[in-house]
Each structure stands twice: as structure tokens, then as C-alpha cells.
Amino acid sequence: RVSRMMQHILHKVQSEVGGWVGLSVVHLGDRDVPNALVFIDKYTQVPRILGPIVQTLDKLPEVYAASEANKRLIDKEYGSLDSLRMMILQDFFRHGFDGSGDDGGSCVDGR
Image 1 (cartoon, one colour):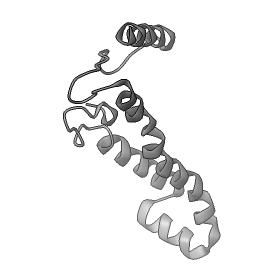
Image 2 (cartoon, helix red, strand yellow; image 1 turned 90 degrees about the horizontal axis):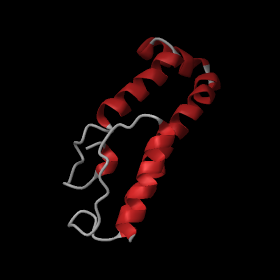
Image 3 (cartoon, one colour; image 1 turned 180 degrees about the horizontal axis):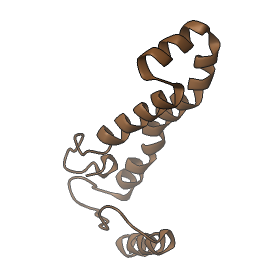
Image 4 (cartoon, helix red, strand yellow; image 1 turned 45 degrees about the vertical axis):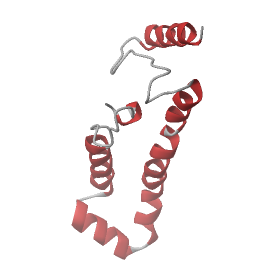
């Protein structure tokens, strides 16, 4: 029953978002996801992964404006505040979901 409900939820989400990238498999009861709680826990990790990046990006304008030295450093090393922001995002999306953290069941990292 759990598997059937998970498939139903997955199908509903897929139809609502229009496009789907990634696996459409819900696996429970194997070595990677031995029960539904482990499945849920894997996806509750996403905010913990993204939180520090979002906080950093949100704080950048404040850091930039805090002093002339900060402005000079950011402009000299990265070209501009927008360039620094883009560099952080590019680096994260290049490596954050490349599967390098794959332990055989870490779907969160983009495997």
C-alpha cells in the first residue's frame, strides 16, 4: 500500500510540474531505502544542503556594502557582485548534483 501511494504521489507531482528530470522510481525496502522514514529523511536534507548557499547569496550585498575594502576586493577578484554570485551558483550546480556523493542510494545529489 505504501508503494502504491508513493507512486500515486509521484505521478501527481510529475503531471503538475509538466516536465521531469531524474529517475521516476520510488524504491522502498532495499539497502538504500530500507523504510519510508529513510526515504523522507533523504529529502528533508535538501534545505540543509541549500540553506548555507541561500544565506551566503542573501548576505553578499550586505558584505559588499560594508566597506570600501570589501567592494575593492570583490570587484578586483570577481569583477562585480553579480559575477561573484554567478560564480557561487555555477560552482554549486556544477558540483552539487554531479553524483560524486553517490553512495549507491543518494538520490538527493543528482544521481
